[in-house]
Image (cartoon, rainbow over the protein chains, first blue to last red):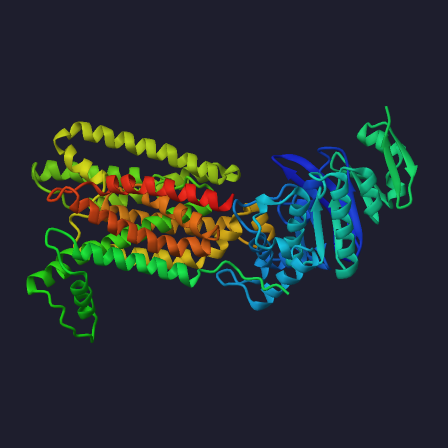
Amino acid sequence: MSLEVREVSVSLDGHEIVRQVSLSVADGEWVTVIGPNGAGKSTLLRAVGGLVRWQGAIELFGRPAAALGRRERARLVAMVPQDPVVPPGMVVVEYVLLGRTPYIPPLGRESAADLAAVDAVLERLDLVGFAGRRLESLSGGERQRVFLARALAQGAKLLLLDEPTTALDIGHQQEVLELVDQLRRDAGLSVLATMHDLSIAGEYADRMVLLAGGRVVAAGPPREVLTQALLAEHYRARVRVIDGEHGPLVVPVR
Amino acid sequence: MTTTAPARLRAGWLAAGLGAVLVAALAGLALGPVRLSPAGVALQLLDLLPGVHVHSGLSPTEAAIVTQLRLPRVVLGLLVGATLSLAGGTYQGVFRNPLADPYLLGAAAGAGFGATVAIAVAHEALGGGRTAPGVPAAAFAGALVAVALTYALGASGGRYRTPATLILAGVAVTSFFTALQGFLQQRYVQEIREVYSWIMGRLTIAGWHDVWLLLPYTVGMAVVILAHRRELDVMSVGDEEAVSLGAHPQRTRIVLILTASLGTAAAVSVSGLIGFVGIIVPHTVRLMTGTSYRVILPLSMLFGGAFLALADLAARTLLAPNEVPIGVVTAFFGAPFFVVVLRTSRRMTS
């Protein structure tokens, strides 16, 4: 089991944002958390990434997350935030090298193994030609690949993706998600993602978790979660759910 | 197969930085009321090295001018410039703010207040017309008190504390100490000239004493900060992402702020307030070489030192036998130079 979350709650500024959430991600599995704005999706992901204080129990690859040091945790979980900081002037290869931070002694420098790991990632994500480019000069889709590259350079087996496709057009959304899916197969990664676009979310996820008001209100294969009744209740949305080849397709109707 | 390489200090830039220091030092030693040949000065310097004996061709008086009068001043200029540039570059990194300078957290205002107090007290105790003793110590103490106050204020925001809170606290502390200093200055109008000359910065009373005072701070600061230069690169993606990469940005920030503030206080205490160096030198280096602090910080030390030594040379020769305040020189020559670098580097990258 890559991730085991048991009855985890998170409070921010005295408000309980995530309440008693339990979920798990098996090795190689893709689980996507959906839910209306403010449901606590990002906060849940940040708790798993160790970025906010939480109560309850989180286990990463069988080890209690609370007992992991920052560097240890960073070797097990890599996170791509919703809107990563783009340091002005930084070039792609420097940025991807930052992903090796958990392997570099605090006051030390990169080893040959670190450089080789970055080489491999750049190669894998077709970024070799971009190595010397500044991040600011890249398009949205290219940038998303670079963010992903830094996360992969961490060598972690669990990938946390917070809204990985929000800034992208539909073609680039599919491109990025296909890439993640291939990586998942090739490198045996597990994925925990949050997503807004329900149809696309359903097509790529093995299982989905529907969060509303900080609680899990439904969980299971996409067909069980993406139902007209559940979406009407928790999103207050009028939708039609059509059976698609890779999962249900959610179409908004007036 | 590509070969990924991290940002490294390239040999060419390192040589350029060392060359700048050498040129600045030789010019500072050779030029002045008595002109000496750079070659003779260079040989005289070699002669100072233990175990090396060469004849420089300088007369004993000229040799004394080099070793007793000019050398300590040149070395002090190099040290102050290196310290302020390194502190400025560090602040810019930990606050992710390109406008950060070594005086951001109130060090300048605190030092100014401390110096003014020392000058005023000396006036009360010793009568007018005497140079006040203890000004460096008072400036040092004032700078440290101000930075400590800024940190305490910024930290009192509790968990809402962000780098911006700290900068705001610095603004408040700076205003407060500036007000205190203004009050004191009004009461001791006669002494205002001395305070004024101190605020504009000067290396005039430089002797080996000041060099020995500053050297341990500069060296200690350089060791601590340069050891953290990769951490500064990691912090450029923001605290949250740095944490998710396994770094400790808050801890690193505290260590680096304390170190840079201590170095700044030491520099201010021997040289007064020299503006401009700490903000412009790191930026110039960044524009020329790239964004990695691994390159920016060491080069800032070298070029900052060379820049200040040259500025001091201009300060004491332009209106000789009078001195121009060095802060005036750094801004007068530094600002147009920076504009040139800004324009040319824009053209190169766009």
